[in-house]
Image 1 (cartoon, rainbow, N blue to C red):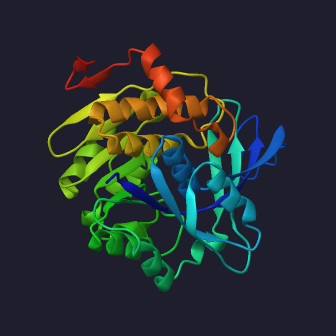
Image 2 (cartoon, helix red, strand yellow):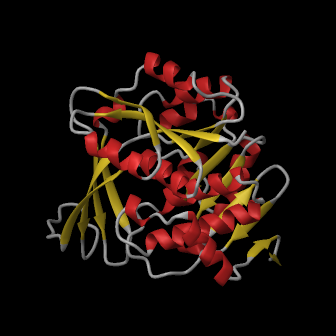
Length: 310
């Protein structure tokens, strides 16, 4: 039976402001443009998995204004059976994107903070051993969801973003795969060098796989047996908003297809490169066929212990 994915995460309305530069403290600056779209790390990761051909269900809450969020998820092939509507407003994000494609994000939790124990148990009851639970930190009850999913025999993938110290109180020994960037890596470990971050996480959670994304510098993979570096696919960045979510979704989808770690990293890097070359979050995420064509055209290399792997 093919692996099923349950993403328990945020569904947000994104308000994206194009800026000459990210606004500094005490500064007032005019935006060059404004766009609105559906996003949230959870929704973006669900859409990335669906576009990569995975069987994915989204778990989470929307407010009374959330019909478009549900329609968007369904439109990309995400199963929405477990999305519920609660009173009040949906979550939203204020996103600044500068002319180099870098971003700064402010989140409003809204309905994403309304998960209940009864809802969590009802949703997880439909999944079990052989399935994968994908988590971030944009919804409440993250630690409880992780523990209950692991207790049901699910593999757990965690993107500890946005980082909060409460994450360190979760039973992270139950996590199978960590996906994090340099900022989250430093917050999780107190280390500043990527090699040290990865080594610290592997020492602390020896049963887990660690994937550390480094933006335009590439990404690192480590598990109990090996560690290697995957270079980025260089493109002109237009908007990096969904880059990490695309990487996570495509890595997991490729892994479910039986790809090797090297192939998973290369596939995720190529998908992420396509995403950052386009405007927006969910709309920028490529479909599997686009990434496959890119793979055929490129001869990207992966470096392990100083040796180039093909």
